[in-house]
Length: 106
Image (tube, rainbow, N blue to C red; front, top):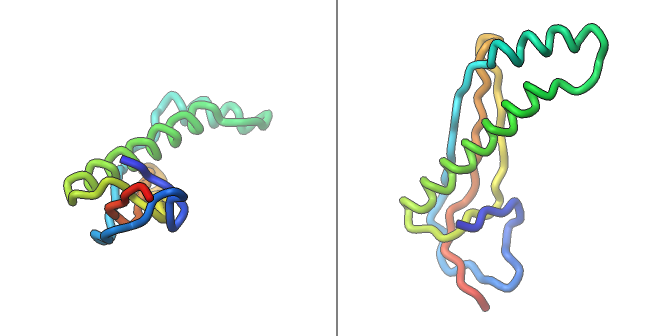
């Protein structure tokens, strides 16, 4: 499954648009990462635990996007984007969305 943020894929043409597709995940923040972040806020710097957790969350959303696109019969997703929300100050929602398409090499 090819997933790109561009509207087209060089060397390929879109032969069919199947429609919008998405992948979503909602996770609670890891207590260890939260504790580390609280300590780090005293001195500043990157919050590595939270960075790692958000990276994993985004990857999970993209994986689900790919699974849903495959279920629709697509072999690619174009114009992929992320949306993110915090829920009740505790949960992190990440949505990956785009357009499921069928592409073929030119």
